[in-house]
Length: 157
Image (cartoon, rainbow, N blue to C red; front, top):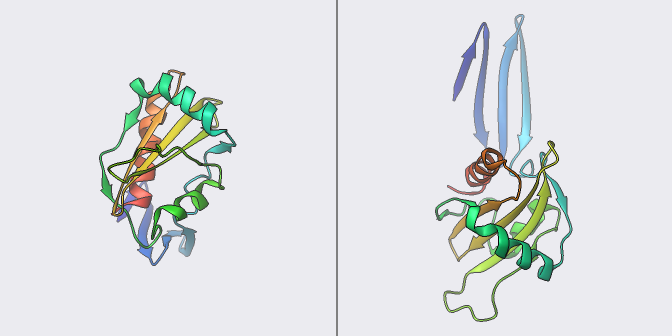
């Protein structure tokens, strides 16, 4: 992928589990390697939350949530549902219902964005697909949409 803007070009490539950024500035080459998806939570300040509190808040907020569609999990990053929490500083709680005939795993978490807005995250997974949802009681649905798109981009194929 090549981006060009006023004498600055940036080439973005993916190698294994890294995003590689390459550019030239005043004739000198520059490059940076960003591990993916370890950068998933760098803009989110994750908070520990108890399962009961999360479920109560999610029940109140889920009607206004922004959701992705199910997409195939990128197996390079997540081989099974137990690995998803490592990308969120182990702050996700398992909110999978006891009665679970579809055998889907559900995880929930709370994070704060740099503007101070608090958001609730729901991750629903089956053996090969994942869906993200973000809800907030603030008027920042544009951020919720952006977070859902960002997570989908990094963790799915």
